[in-house]
Amino acid sequence: MTDRDQPTVDAVIAARDEGLAALQAAPDLDALDAAKRTHMGKRSTLASLQRGLGTLDDAERREVGRALNEAREALAEVEARSRQALEAERDRVQLAAEAVDVTLPPRTPPRGALHPVLETIDALLDAFTGLGYTPVTGPEVESEWHNFEALNIPADHPARGLMDTIYVQGLGAEPDQVGITPMLLRTHTSPVQARVLRTQEPPVYIVVPGRVYRSDVADATHLPAFHQIEGLAVDRSLSFADLRGTLAAAVRSLLGPDVPIRLRPHHFQFTEPSCEVDAYYDGHWMELLGAGMVPPNVLSACGIDPDAWQGFAFGMGPERLAMMRHGVTDIRQFVDGDLRFLSAQTTVSP
Image (cartoon, rainbow, N blue to C red; front, side, top):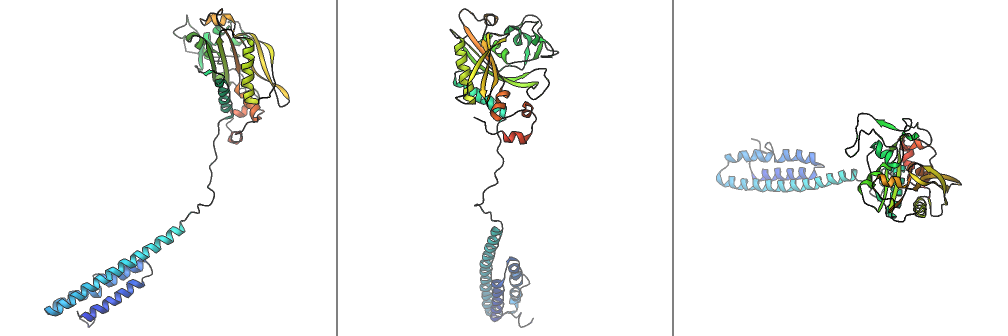
């Protein structure tokens, strides 16, 4: 055993002071761990002195043993303080490196928006519900009776031909009809009016949004699948003046309060008298919709007494109104799915 390893109080103090200096001088946690192993571990000078206690007499053993315990406590206390300080410094440096400048403006993701046609439909529904109308919907695959006969469109009418109507094979009649009735993709939303009149007692004020289908070739102004919004009012003592006032209020709510409108005589199979409604917009007259008074035989076909009740109906294409509101010149842009076009259609002209 060397003099350094001889278990004396002076040797313990020397080992303690050397260990304290090394622990306090450690620049980082790795160096601190190395100093702890060297001066506090199983192969440290203090451990060697501990193993030599058996060579001492009782008095010396007690004195050196006390010094060893005090040395270990001093080293443990300094090691804990150094570790706490080094960990705090490590965390400070790491947080500084990962800091985020919250004063910078955030990255704002692009905002979504309603499709221009859906936005126009919502605006129309808001206008008509404000006038007291209730929105209703119906099936897109419809019976021929609801789509035609109930609306005073006989079998020899041109609209019944395959060039205009898409028929669906393999489907039979509905339970409440007599005989076999062909099924088709509805050509307008008017069948919903017939369904409501057959199941609901007047007065009736409804507006019917939905998709309809025609055997058309897509071009700048036509689509084979498009939307319609139709309205129906059945009450006592309704007149053509009530129809005109309703349509004027709805159109001006969409295109502006000062937009001039005009009614032109027209012919529709399911209204009489009938008219088309135009609006003077962007320097010229634009056709918007068709309308008219519901004839007595249509009311009778739906179980309504035409001597007690009168009604009017109207129908319009939201795509055409959306084109006017958003400055679109080709209706096909609404269905192309081009996000560049859709993202630009977030405001309306009026």
